[in-house]
Image (cartoon, rainbow, N blue to C red; front, side):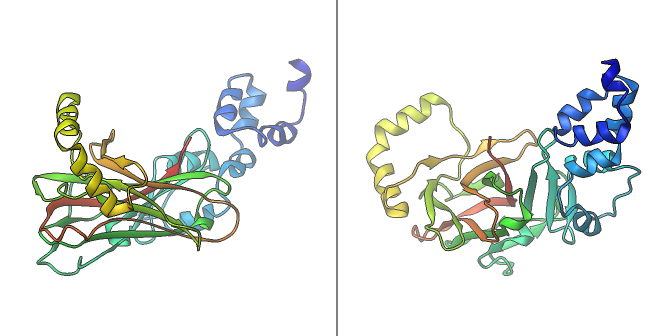
Length: 282
């Protein structure tokens, strides 16, 4: 240990650059020499994304930090970028990039028509406003992101972040279609029901009584393929439903992800759209 501590700080910093943020924090407890190296800008700039300067420049409000380690921690807590239309954060342990596209950053059919959709602020939202479906029969939501904005060679999941109002109606009469498409590759389709999780007894009774109907409706939406997904509760009080997954690779490709229900032709309402979150899947 004495031999390691005798190494110059820049040498220790170079070694720590090959570790992870979690390992760098642990090594700072080894000795004062390690702590000085582990807290250095040289180490933490290596853990920041290559485009962190752009992210800092786009942050709303502007970020104030005294070291790269402090900046890393701030980005782990998430910041608003792109005029507040997106939320960016780093995974604390891995440093991988995550984004959430706000409802305003999505393409929502007829969302500019106040008869069908309302835009309103919610205190529990990280964005300035959310989209609330009033009533209409055509539900179509789509988001886009370029793989260059994400961590390369990483498996990502896309999740629609939502709430269902107490007076929601018509959202689970037909399954919705969820899809992800990367570049010109084949679109990956699954089905989803926009409803709250029910207890196991109710789910069992529904499968026994309406199983054939459910499969018939599913085949109408996604050709009978894929799995049926339901919203899951998040720690922040919102619900999320997995739209799909994709691999970011290294080249620049556009990722399209969305949810739609356009075959039921019945009125639906009470869906509150927060955004689409894109985060690594482990």
